[in-house]
Image (cartoon, rainbow, N blue to C red; front, top):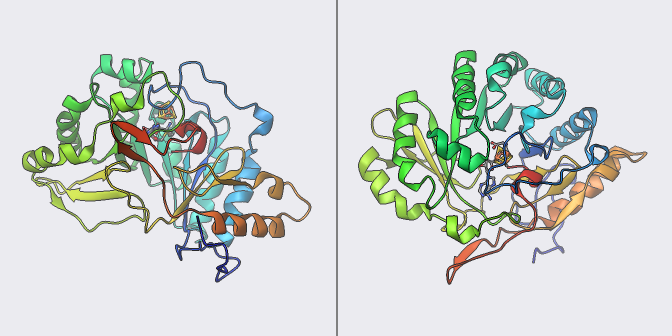
Length: 342
Ligand code: SAM
Ligand code: SF4
């Protein structure tokens, strides 16, 4: 349990009771998506009614409230952020915030399907980096993981992003019995394409059709063979996130490993997540949250947000409780990643 007796040192800045400064927000702009990745969503999802979702103007006001309180980086996510109608309006506003020095960076995590027609607009709006999720280069496996036949579209999106001048990092969820044998191929492809790659262990977020344990692949088990094959050397690179990084021998590209189940690295956590309904989750792996939408829609949003964010900082937990024990995944939370924002 967090120690709620401690005072927050600077009421307007976001510092939690463990002294961690929050400078990074992952803002989910929609829970909807054009893919249905088996580890992320059920095939038949009930999406939120539109009325519950913050408007684009509200999302921008909330972003500015975070900037006023010391946040320097915003990552838009979802669901699939690029399927939200009118999303370029928000990205352009955040790009202006970057241009005016209010924000260091606006970035996105995307499945890439919309990049063929949006990459240039993103660059023009001030985005410089995107994370694209890609779990396989095999069209048949892509279809079975995402339940949609869109690999070509995603690869075209990655090409379009590079052409537009965006730095692309690939995110791959390691899935036992699905893409495990293909991971070296993905690493080689990223080396050829001069892309950084982050491998992620599957986490127990929300009910899906499969047993999470059946797909769990501990990345620590892959590391020795990857180190030998790709001459990995540990890198000191840090983002305040859970990844540990390695340099890849030939090109020096980065390989990141996110290992929430084999190693908990929450000590330096600098982030919070906000859903598209305006709930702030202080930890991906915990259920406690604070409603910011009511504060945002109140008569005095600034002071209401101060109070709500103050509560959020007091309640930010030390870390998640994900772990594998006796062949069972523990620390499960009920929300899907697509609801919290990945
Ligand atoms: N639709 C976008 C995408 O796929 O990049 C953004 C949202 S998605 C929820 C963000 C990231 O979360 C993706 O890289 C996805 O692979 C990852 N993800 C989703 N469910 C996960 C789970 N249960 N465990 C680990 N990663 C997960
Ligand atoms: Fe959609 Fe991203 Fe979830 Fe896949 S991981 S279903 S692309 S939100």
